[in-house]
Every structure is written in structure tokens, then in C-alpha cells.
Image (cartoon, rainbow, N blue to C red; front, side, top):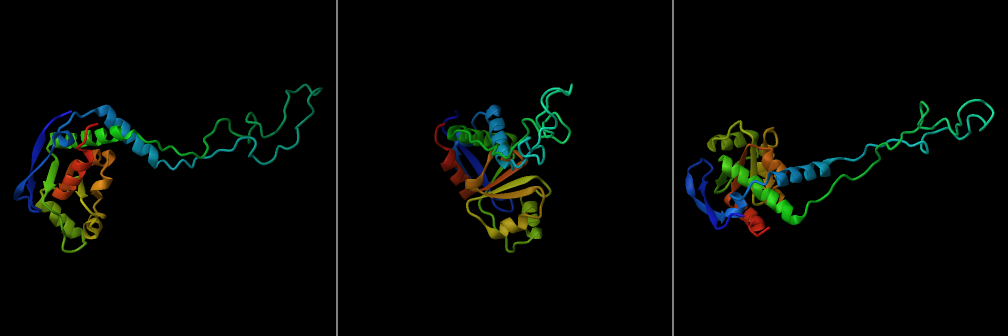
Length: 215
């Protein structure tokens, strides 16, 4: 694990220099650990599955209560029900049943995976720290202007705030390649799913406080 701290430049909403911020090197400059990134994404995708697929075994298919013919003496194979899986219209063998596909990785693995995702964006030069983000109105055109000021108009952007901001969230919801999250909801899938990662200074400090410990 990387030791010490990393100093990141902070810019204003118009991308003018606005200072610097120090974070533990482990948060943005650690090893990539691709196997953990894969495991974290698979875990998130599994949790999103509805698990509602359902098939009927022969016990649930209507009909078939009477034995089709007697056991012996007909010259035909034995048959106990017309709803046998071997018959057309019969039940399904080992078909899917409603289930919960979700599973959780250990906490240390989840944190290490998120650190690796942040490190990948930092290494690619697409991690941007903004002093603060605010909009005068919760309108899409205001968000477009904000992104233009940051030099990210038309780009795939994940914006991370320290606290929920209704104006920013409403202004971004009609932009298909822009997503807004609160720091506590930051996750591997969304970080890797967007080319650019924009965090407010407060959001980065919150994330660093969450991930700065050893794991």
C-alpha cells in the first residue's frame, strides 16, 4: 500500500486554481488490484438482479392427477402423470426459481476496490477536485454551463458531493452521461462507468476519511 500523502490541485467551478488538498496516498495512488475491481463490480451487478425468474415443476403444473394408464400390461413405458417433465406440457426440471442473487464482499475488500477505482482515475488524469459546486437554478442548461466551465461539456462525468443538493441533482438527471452521487454512496461500478470523476473538496475529504485506514 502506498504511504504518505498526495497533494491534489483544487479548482473553482470555472476551473481556475483554488488551492490544494492533501489526501492519504492509499486513497488515490494505491495499487490498481484489477481482481478486486472485477469482484466489486460483479457483486454490485448481482445485487441489482431482480431474481424473479420462475418455472413450474411437475408439482405446480395443472392437471396430471390421474395416472395415464395402468402400470403393466399395455406394452408402453410406465407413466405416472401427463405433467411429467418428459411429456409436452409437463413441468421443468431444475428450472430457475425466485431467489436473491445479492452477496457482499468483506468490508476490507470493498474499501480496497474503491481505492483502486479512485487510483485508476487519478492515474488517468481524469480525477478533478472542485472547491465547491452550486447552481443558481435546478435546470439542465445550468448544469451544461457548469460542465462547460470545467471543460467537461459532453463528457461522461460522475459528480460527487459531500451532501445532497437538490438543484444539482435535478439539473443533471436529463444528461445521459452525467450522474450525481453523495460521498457516502460512492461505489466502484459508477466510478469505472464514467470517464471523468469530479469531487468537491468536502466530498473528497469525506471519502478520504472513509478509505484512509489500512486494509
